[in-house]
Amino acid sequence: MARSTTTTRSSPRHPCESGKKLICRPRQPARAAAWTLATLLVALLLPAVSAAREYLQLFVAEPYLELHTGPGRGYPVFHVVPRDESVDVLFRRTDWFKVRTEHGVEGWAAQRDMLKTVLADGSPFKFELGDLAGFSSHRFELGVFAGEYGGANLISTYWSVSLNPQLAVEAAAGQFLGRFANGETGDLGFAHVISPDTRWSPLLLLGVGIAHIEPKGTLVTPANRTEQTAYVGGGIRYYLTRRFFMRAEYKAHYIFTKRNENEAADEWKLGFGFFF
Amino acid sequence: METGIRVLLLTAALALLPGCATVRGWFHGKHGGASSETQTASAAAPGAAGADEATPPRVIEPQVERRQIKVPRIKSSNVELGLFYGALSIEDFGTNADYGITAAYHITEDFFFQGEAGRSRAGRTSFETLGGNIQLLTEAERRFTYYDLSLGYNFLPGEAFLGRGVAMTSAFYLLGGFGATKFAGDTKFTVNFGGGYRVVPTDWMALHVTVQDHVFQSSLLGVTKLTSNLEARMGATVFF
Image (cartoon, rainbow over all chains, first blue to last red):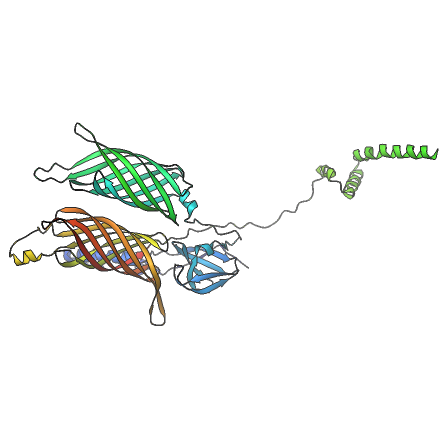
């Protein structure tokens, strides 16, 4: 059987790309907002247009490959692809792959079934799984927290880039809302993961940041101020399922003020994150 | 006598045979080498493999080109961006239109993470309406702006059917999260929870109907209380 690795299909081109000249009328100021919104909608509602896209071609090595009607375990199987036939992988959503058979039937194949398919040279199809191994070693993390910052409620989010399984650079942004002050915080630092290959993995945190503080006054309202900070802390991650984990952490912030005394603020937070 | 001769011959044979076995290449010519190899091959002695060093075996070079597999990147489509428009009931301030943007990341088939930001404008309280020209808030303070970060859980996945030919995947989802609301000159920590229904007519687009409550503590009207701000809205999102 002649086997090729990739197939190329053309997706429909947008009319604007056909080279026709578009007549532009001067926009009235009152309509500018509507035009902006319409442009945004068109940009959002049109899928990414590309002249040609290469799809990965995989061959069924098991007796058959089941195709579901939707990307979920509850959606029924409506088609099976027999052994040695091929499918084109269109795209992936969570743990499901949208594939197209040689006969043009499109359906969703589960990740665990796709692991049993092979490439054109007979080698197994390998891809990144969002499992405990991925939790131990991954590139990016994103998460959100709720907690407390110096006695105020805190909403926080963070982004992490792993340099290796044990060391990551993390950026965090937060907003704290309290009785006496509101404000925002931004941190940049390192996280050292002590035991990345276990379900419970402790962290050590060290970094610098800024804090913008807007005091709430009654009679005399102090001016807003932005201060530099440094923090040291620790935390723990607990792997839940798939790409998902819980994370709790504590940071001791030192706020370097322009006044005589520096300040300190404790940050406690609990949240969830995912890796990819 | 005979016994003595037998012992002599046997001793000679024992002395000669191992000696012969240690001698290679009785004849140094081409012919001789070949014959010795034939002998060692016929003897099939494993220790005689060193004899091949002189003439390496003929190896057939395969004329097959190894296929280079180039695996193209598989596009991931887990991010959902979109707009919404609906109605927000601001406690004590009536119901008004609200609009905003959402962004979601689908982590698994069950869970997704969603961030959203919206805006509305508060109306007049009953007190203001009855009291004539009393104004509790300025026009700028009536602007109601919020954002929240939520975790969503898909449940009851299914399909919605339009006639005989069209089937669209769908799911109900629960949402819960926290964020902040800026209203009446202050920003408050806000908890939001609710649910929605998502229909996916094509692979790249989804339609939503969502109902949520935004709860925060307010002391705007004299007493500190938890205010409940219900929101019902429709939205369209695009998968990337």
